[in-house]
Length: 503
Image (cartoon, rainbow, N blue to C red):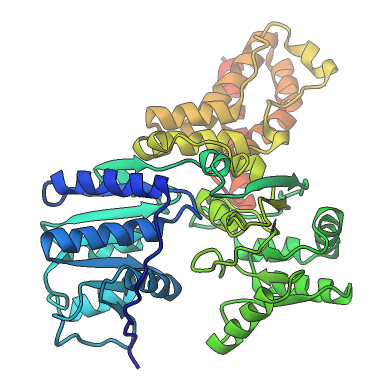
């Protein structure tokens, strides 16, 4: 059974800031040359769907051509289709059941899952007819790029809450010629369109978390940490301290963790359910219906509700995980930001040091800067999230420090050298070479002979290990690789000392 739409009258009214955004974006689209693309930023909860749907309506009316709206989740396609129908736009959802479209004259707009449409276009590059504008929802997701070449000589409008590419090697400025920034989170809160988020941070030792090839903390290392009884206890204590009795959404990184959370809260007698991607459509619907109608319900999930889910009555968001993704951070918290007549504020319980990594959810971000210089923004975030114990150089004991009085007291901060190295475009290995030279200079300046040189070499062993550990942290190295780097570092420095003092 394919998904058709019913035309619904009386479309919702745009808020003033939404109407202003529509006017600005459409005016720019009218003047855009072919193949020039725009990106629009607006916080989660600001109404991006109603804005780009109204733009689609105006485009269809002015140019008499069809609009394609791309999403990456079926829920987003359905929600978009409903809004288009409210605006009187005849549309079709292209899902996995739609194999061909022999007659397209009855449709003004299509909403499509990117993967499904890519498959259809690979089979037939003329699968869709007379498309004049492509709208990309959640445009930070790079999965959309693979089908752009099928739509030449038309404009693309990307929309996102966080204009930071999901792939740092493919920055958004390569696809979009300009960024239009909508209202900020603080402004929307001040005007009463979003709730104020109050953050409660709970320090968690994340040293056991590992980083995968995608730059994100791995699910496996999350599971090992967050399924521990200590972390489960911390989660319950945080809930009981500030959120007891509220409708609560808990985000976890893995299914094992979410199930453990469910069992823990269930044993305490709290109304709780668990939801993950393995649930059938019926099970998911029943779970969400329970959550909707349980005023103090607790729903533990695994990222599945970050997009395509809207429950305005959520009063508390619990981040029972860490993330390196600014987008995911905003998506999770955004689930609690919807305003109701009886709800002007919501709570954010952070058990992943995320607010320290990204700053508070409502903290203003210069999105223009992020768009044009994402590498500098990521570098700044890298500084902010650096583990406090690696913030400074190794603190040398006083009795050892006295043996190096002839050397400069200036610290060698591996992190600073690493970031400087990146800015210059040099290979990261240069950092360790510079550190070896620093250590060699200190030995050379303070040793009178060969024997004293090796005594000083041995006194520097702890500092050498510390610096190599810092370097390993910079490049996300494994423990084995870091150990190998230390052995190499030690051997190189030893050879330099031997060559110099043996002369």
